[in-house]
Image (cartoon, rainbow, N blue to C red):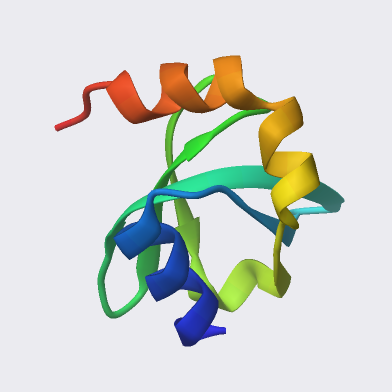
Length: 85
């Protein structure tokens, strides 16, 4: 998992995670902004904002192929320009 998070952070390319929070399981497309010991800080395309994702709640992670990335180019520009603290 760590390798794919690093890939997103270094290349500023989105990835897909399966995330579990409470009783909800969701698929999220994210763009990693920061990695620390317990969380991933990332732009979430679903919520259209910077979110913190706990490692413990990430069930699965995958890279998006280049064709899929092209489909989201406008969203990617928005995520890349999004400011966070």
